[in-house]
Image 1 (cartoon, rainbow, N blue to C red):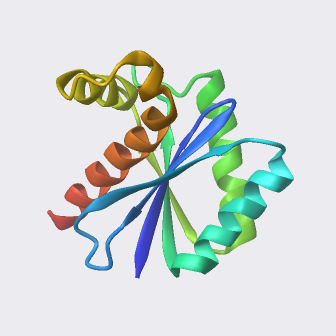
Image 2 (tube, rainbow, N blue to C red):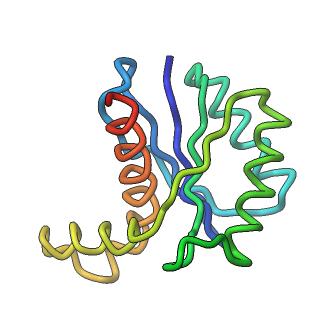
Length: 137
């Protein structure tokens, strides 16, 4: 069994996948969004290719804990993923994941130009690792 996570943005979706032991999150790739239909088809392809049983979708939550306008869009997208894939979809608070990804890139001294294509993958990886770590408890 494997779990994937999605860091859903307006233009891109970062993908990460668990190892088969469900202990480590691995960055997968960044998908350039096209349309709802094509985006869902891409997710369905990944689910089939890797034998995914669960999908974690990072949801943007405001600092006060509320789901705002962007969060509602992501939630609707997640519901459509669940409907189409027939897999369990978990919404996971993604607050600070992009900031954390930038912090890690700063520590590794990755320049701004190079990090752009990796930041969404790393954010998805941070989302998934948080979820995997929480499941163990």
